[in-house]
Image (cartoon, rainbow, N blue to C red):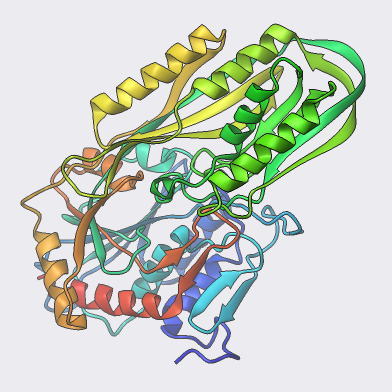
Length: 478
C-alpha cells in the first residue's frame, strides 16, 4: 500500500525502486550517457558478472541461468539509458549536473517540474533488480542497455550480434500496462535549412509567442490532435505576411516531442496586433478541447536586424505548406496511426535557420512519400532538405512464441486478457530485429503518463504488477 507519507525508498517493489532511484541520481540526457554506462559496468564488476561496453556506451551484462533453466533459451532484457530532458518554464533544474528530484503522491511517482526518466529508466531498474537477486528463477539473462534512443537510436544502430546470444528479447519500453506491442513504426527526420540573409533594421518590432500547449510524445500523442506551436505560429505569420518581416524565429526542443512553444520577432506595422489578436481568439476556440491552455502573447521589442523579405516569405511558405499531424490511419489495425508528421524544431544554428521535421510510418512507401513531399516543399521555397536518423519498422511475426506465453501468463496472473497491439512510435525492436533476425521479441511496460513533458509520471502499483508479470514470465520460459 502506498501511503501519503511514502517516499521512493519505502514503496514496493523496493528492489526495483531502489535501482530506479540510483539511476536517477545520474544525469543522462541523450548524448550524455557515459556516467550511467560506467555505473552499469561497475555494477556488473562488483557482482562478478560478464559485461561488455562499446564505444557508444552500450552495455551488455550477462547472468547465468538458475538451476533447472540451463537448457532454456537465453533472454535479453532490453531498455535504453537516455531520457528526454524537458523542464517547466520556472524550473531551475540543471540536467547536466542535478539528480532527478522525485515525489511520491499516493500511487503516483513524478518529478519536480521535469521529466521523470521513467522512459526508460524503469527498464534498467527491472534489469538491475533481476541481476542483483539470488532468489529468482530464470534462464540465462542478457541485460542490454542502449544509448541515444531518444535522438535516433544511435546506440542500437551500432550494435552487432557478437555478444548477444538471446533467442527471446523483452523490450521494456512501452507505457501501457497490459498491452503487448508486437510491431512498431519506422521513421526518419527531414532536416531543412535556409541560409540566413539579414539586413540592418532599427526600430520597434513585435515578439509573438505561442505557449501553454500540452505537447507530448510525437508518436504516442499524435493521434490526440494536440496543437503544434510551430504550425500555429506559421498561421499567425501567414495572416500577417504583408505586414511583417521575420527578425528571429524559434520553436520546439526535441525531434520526438510535439512543440509546446514558439517565438517569432517581426516588424511592427500598423494593424498587425489587431490581426494577431483576432486570429488568436479563433485558434483558442479551435483547440479548446485538446489545448485549452493555449496562450498567444504579443509585446513590443527593439529590432536591430531582420531577414531579407524574400527569405522571410520563403520560411513562412514552408511552414504553412508542410504537412503536420496524422496523415494516414492503418488499414490493418483499427485506431492505429499509420503515417504522421511532426514539425518538431525551428532554430538558428551556424548562420542557418534549421527546421527539423520528424516523420513516422509503419509503411515504407508511405514514409517515402512524405519525405519526398517535405523535400519538394523545401525546394520550392529555396530551402535544402537532407534526410537523417532513419530507423526501420518492426514487422508483426505471426509465429511468435513469446507473445503466446506472455498473453497466457498475464491472464493467469490478473484474470483478464492482455491486448496485443502495434504502436505508432519507434521502438528499438525494429533495429534489433535486423541484427538478431531469429530472436523472438515483445515489448511491454508499466503505466507511464505524459512522457516527454515535465508532467511525466508513473503508476507505482503498475510498476509492481509489471514486476510480478516479468518474474513469472521468466519462470515460464523453459
